Length: 363
Ligand code: PHE
Image (cartoon, rainbow, N blue to C red; front, top):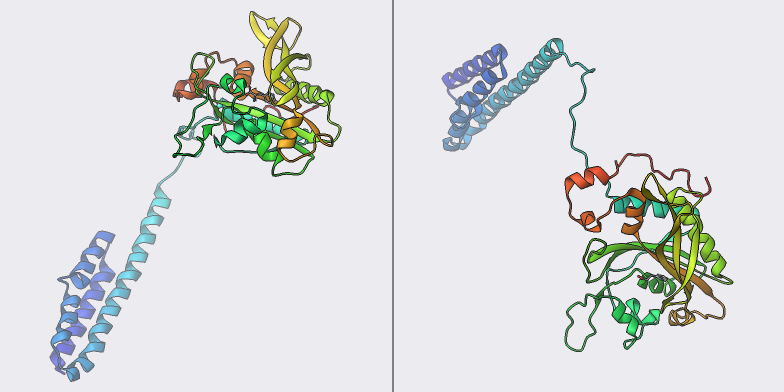
């Protein structure tokens, strides 16, 4: 071990630590760090010499050189922290934020009217003890048709302009569900009565004009229990529609109709009136057809493995988009699905808005 080297190292160390101590800016400190510990740095250079030393020499020099590196590293870190604190203190002492200035606007999205209406419906029916059920949009024909009393040859299958999926040889084609009624079947085959569910969701039919789009939304309602009759259906629909349209003077009328899966079946009309030249629901000006309903057909109840002599029920299905149009005044259904930001801003709802139905049913 040469005393010279040791002196050199001690000198280098004291030069470096003095330099570090004197550094006035973070940039100057960084330059010092590179000059010492960077690839070509003075300390790095010393570390490299250790490779060529004899074992004896390395035993003596190693700790000294490593000690140098540690001391310099620690001095750099301490100085860096001190300089950063100084910079922060300087900013705190000089910068002032005016908390009374308005915050910059951040772009905010809106809740789509379909989502809003589905939330309102779930809220109304939850108050009446209904749970929300779901089913797949790609459905098999048994759930979409057969179990709903629409056997293969049934002319009612032609009532729906069905989208059929491609099928492998010998397999039955699946369909895009043409209504939410298959959720009736899925619920009855997986749950014990009493059943009280609504099933909102997308449905598909090959149809397109101002009031029809190939994809639209329905909400299904189903109640299965002992002793359920048409009176329960009428009360439920009237209560729901009054709450939804927020009009106590809204009345409904059941008109005989036909659906394969309900018997008897009824088309439900709601009363409307003309206020300031505009049609609004409620009042006594006329009737408007709104939804399909009926008592669940005994064949449907038995297809689901239940005894129709024990259990009865009612079901209804209604277009969610149509409900939205009637309540919020849009006149072209196709605009619902165009994604035009101006339309969404105009008809959309703020995510933080108070729900319009916070009063709930009977409020
Ligand atoms: N599924 C029927 C339709 O889409 C509506 C409906 C549902 C009718 C339940 C009666 C009972 O047209």
